[in-house]
Image (cartoon, rainbow, N blue to C red; front, side, top):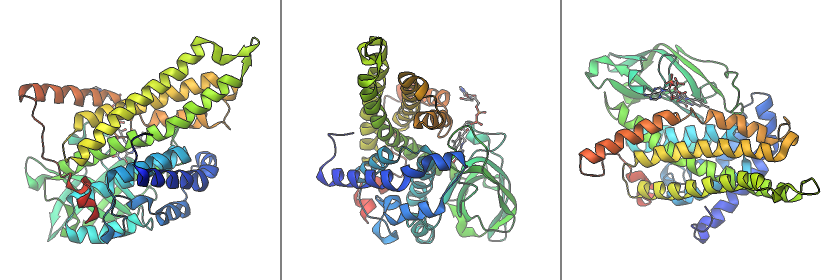
Length: 404
Ligand SMILES: Cc1cc2nc3c(=O)[nH]c(=O)nc-3n(C[C@H](O)[C@H](O)[C@H](O)COP(=O)(O)OP(=O)(O)OC[C@H]3O[C@@H](n4cnc5c(N)ncnc54)[C@H](O)[C@@H]3O)c2cc1C
């Protein structure tokens, strides 16, 4: 999003671009081939301060705001071009850390945030089950009161970081809480009765460890409950909101070098005695990707503004997530077309990025569900005279809150 960053943010962006390029990118293909998550790399990234750019200094963060974090994230994404690491990163930082910061008690923040921010521990955010994905309200993982605490039983499925996570934020149905039974719990994964699967064998995002978590009479203390009994959906939707906007930042970082490289290749590659860029069909592939990227940047900037103002911008967040995942997929496919047989080779990174981009159709909600969210919000706004809902706790993102 060149042109919007001030001097400090440009320096942050450049710093994390170098971190992504030098620390992550050289080993991306290896992690993809070998289903590899590298804990040492995670720790090294933690040591750069990346997980805590916008987290309060008293928990080990840098105490900066969301624009500085976005500059860092965009630079890091551009430098690493590694959706494996980026999906893991977004799951921890945008989902777990953000939701915790906004809805956790001071004691919970002090206990859980510092090891996540330092990179010593890995977090996951577990909603999906075998019987429920898009329809999050139908989740079945069962919680029941047990003395002063709770017991959890059931299975979470297809969760980013689950095979390697030390800390899990999970959503369960606590029937005793009444109609709004969905409640949010945070726990270490090293607990009797809690089992982590091996990474699932997936088509893409293979550098991201994705798997299941099985809960068998897992005992949690009262302080594991986040935001009160039956108040889990707020935490969940808040996490979604932040995740969708930051996914837009990640993808705008990934797309720019792809477009630059396609442009250069098309100017050099000859066919029929002239550069392939002389053909409008080829130009069209690049123009389409660039246009989508510019549109994406525009809505991401609006989304970040809304977040900073503390507004519930779920319509915008859905537009961002849908546009971002579709734009990345289209751009990767077009990059492969431009590169012909070279793009189709396993040793070329477009092949990996294309497989990864398909995973982004599902992670953070499908495009169909985003259309559904946009439609539902449009109708609600029309019926309420177009008023913003201001009921999400976004104060942690307004700069001062982050620095506290
Ligand atoms: C890479 C990756 C990472 C993930 N990480 C996590 C994670 O960290 N935590 C987590 O909890 N989950 C995670 N997931 C799971 C993800 O959130 C779900 O896959 C997603 O919500 C869709 O659910 P589903 O796969 O069960 O599909 P379903 O809900 O079964 O949907 C199947 C199809 O029906 C369509 N559909 C369903 N309902 C409607 C409707 N009302 N209107 C229109 N179309 C509809 C969907 O769009 C989809 O095309 C991850 C998935 C992937 C691929």
